[in-house]
Image (tube, rainbow, N blue to C red; front, side, top):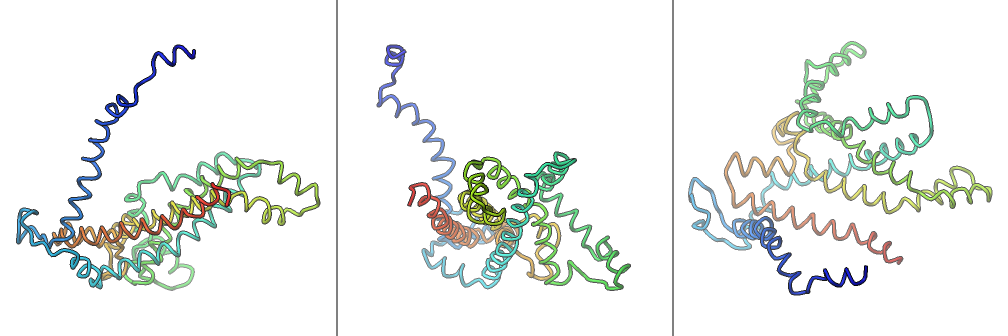
Length: 299
């Protein structure tokens, strides 16, 4: 086998030639469009004024100042962060509790598990339309409230209730995501430390808090990081349920960029704001994964 492997050994210079076509394709797919976005983001390109992007007025880094001074954009950013700060912890708590409960054996466990992950398989646009039908003023949720309490709430017309309705829809869809990750993490735990804790007289709560939770630290952080990044891209539910209304009360970052770019055709401004969000996400992700890198090095 050693002689055979040496016979098929590829020279180092030839290896570079093998990966060169892939690298060229990747440059066209990622690097070149990204560089063009940077350039367009530093212009005031509006197709109605200048059809060709390379003829748009170059205003340089001052474009970032103009983008940050957009109050509607800043409100959308704050609103998106608020939604993420509320829904991500709730989704994590519910998903983790479901995963821990489903470790036990009970009748119909497989069926209940299948039902629990169905929301994640639903297309977000379809889920948003279903929740719109549920929370619309003449929908079943409001109808049940009127029957049992005599109260009528305009869920999608009131700014506060509209935001709550969107968050409930997001929690419904993405709790199964946390459930799947934490179920896999719990099933992969070594049983020896847990059994040793029980032998030494530890209670279930103590073993859970002092043994199980520390071993789940890395999967928990990964689940929270993935879900937090995903929450910044929420679009389908606000768009399908409220169109960002009433007014701008439920407009998120992606909705703001969509309207700015495709409705008002402010391509330069939209590119600048997209770059701001991109840079912010990189910074947050960089600091978020630092504990994971430290744990991997054993620090």
